[in-house]
Length: 333
Image 1 (cartoon, one colour):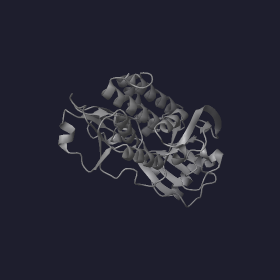
Image 2 (cartoon, rainbow, N blue to C red):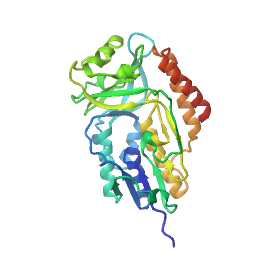
Image 3 (cartoon, helix red, strand yellow):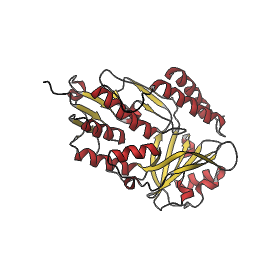
Image 4 (cartoon, rainbow, N blue to C red):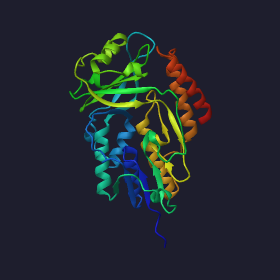
């Protein structure tokens, strides 16, 4: 009998790592190519995911403690069109430490026999039709035929604080100002605060950025030090998506990078990886089928609605981005 096709995954973030572990569960040989040592950084970065994602990760062998998760949150604080925060209830969510998630998934991948290849992916590995190829390289989408993104993207910058936050500081908070917005969330590993908008809003060091946030939402930086914030991740955070090339299956942010507003980008990326690998390997997918284009169009419309309602919605950068989202909602539907 012919041997089943080996799998090549490009990119060793959470999506690529979980895809590799899942493929090994399905009995396939897996090579994972990356240009960096997976899970080797210690920069605190926290992302919010639904409680169901924690249950999924537990099923794959990732303990919540490794992610900094010791509680679920049903509340969030929102200051969007007014001058002060409003407490809203919603579905239970958890705040996950990204480095902890990568380290845990890297350990699982190693233990189940994934072959790691550090360096540039050779053309032969990409072009070989006898291999199943998955692209999990995030916004770079290295195998994509074309990437769709705004010409002038919205950008973000984060700062981390390692002291364990109080529960009311740890839950998600969002506050809009005249140029953009700030968000805050934390877990047992610490607290992450981000600022999103144009480059003028995010430039400088933490004390300068903190002063800008104080002008429109002093409550969101209450209790945070004025001169001590470790710089974290920075870069584009607006919606973008890609057309797949002739060989690779795009998964996670390589397929669609969601806007941080009203999204569950990490959770959706992990779920999409499991669906894509299952469909390619065994011809079926776990859980209910999802209409990807409709889901993406709904996301674009949801982000557009939040921008339209925000204090910054009339600014030129955001109006330009809103035009891109309107076109995206029509194209993706």
